[in-house]
Image (cartoon, rainbow, N blue to C red; front, top):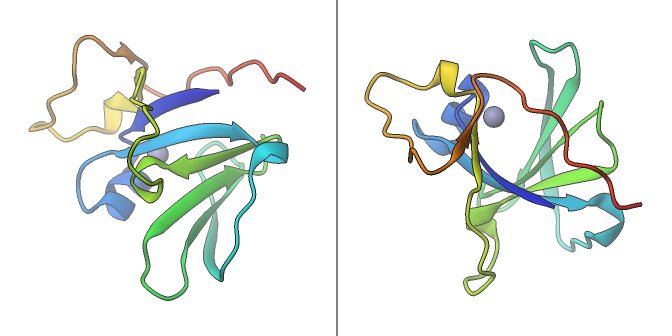
Amino acid sequence: MAVRQCWCRQCQQVAGGGPTHNAMFATADVRLSGELATHAYVAASGNTLTQSFCARCGTPVMAQSSARPQFRTIRLGFLDPGHGLAPQMAIWTADAPDWARIDPALEQHRGQPPAPASTR
Ligand SMILES: [Zn+2]
């Protein structure tokens, strides 16, 4: 539904310093198998964010927000190559470090952008 690059502090921690790259899917369209480990916390927005990782290797898999249960945000690096997805938007750019180079071709938001319209 949307592909975003996120520079929020939590994403910088997950990604090792840079942004995360995330593809939002309708929850009903997502099927996962295997064991996930999760970490949930209350974000600055007041919503609970749950990050999921592979329980075996720690690879970031997805995130979800209590405010938007209709979406699952899958980490782009988790998907097999060939998906053809690329970021359209950079978000939470106000939290990006001074050395960050954000593609000026991307739509940019200093904080949280509006949610994409749900198709169901
Ligand atoms: Zn983020």
